[in-house]
Amino acid sequence: MHLVSAAVLEQWQALSDEQIVAQVVNGQTALFEVLMRRHNERVYRAARAIVRDEREAEDVMQQAYVNAYSHLRQFDRRAKFSTWLTRIAINEALARTRRRDRYEPFDEEAAGDTMMTRQQADPERQAFARELGTLLEGAVDALPDGARETFMLREVEGLSTAETAESLGVSEDVVKTRLSRARATLRRALFERAGLAASNAFRFERPRCDRVVEAVMSRIGG
Image (cartoon, rainbow, N blue to C red):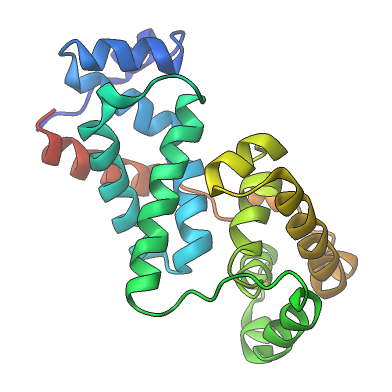
C-alpha cells in the first residue's frame, strides 16, 4: 500500500476538513490520509491522556480512525470535523479503560485532595524524569481521570471551552472547573519550579505519524 505523496498532500492542504470529507465520501479514499496527518497529534494527545500508555494510545488512534472512516457519511457538520473525530477517539479510549476497570470517574468535590495524593504517590517517576518534557508528561499523567483529558484538550491542544465540552460530553462549567483545578495542581507540582511549555509535551513525531497512517490506510483499503 502506497501512501499519498508529499506533493499531493500539499495540494489538498488548502481545503477544509469538510471539503476533504466530501471527497473521501465520494470515493477518493486515499485523501483520508490528509485528515489523519492533519489531526494525528490532537487525536494522540486525547487518547494518551486517558490510557496513559504510548503504544495503547496508537492502538486507540487506529481504531478511532477506522471507526470515523466507517461512519464518515454520518458526519453532519453540526460540530467541526476535528471535534467529531476527537470525540470518537475519546470514546474508544474510555471504552478500553473501563473494560479493564482502570478509569475512576472524576469527583469534583474531592478533586483537590485526590490530585495531590496521586502526584505525591509517585515520587520515583518525578525523580526519574530528567528532561523537562518527560517531567511535564509525568505531572499530567498524575492528574485524575477527567482532569487529564480536560487539560490535554484545552491547554495542550488548544481547544476552546465549548469544543472541549463537546468532545468530552460534559458541560462547559464542568470543563472550567476541572481545568482550573488541574492548572492549580500542575502549577504547584511543576510550573513554578520548571516553567515548562505545555505545547512541547506529548508530541506526535513523523515516524509515529507514518506508522499510524499506513496501518489505518491498509485497514480501510486506501
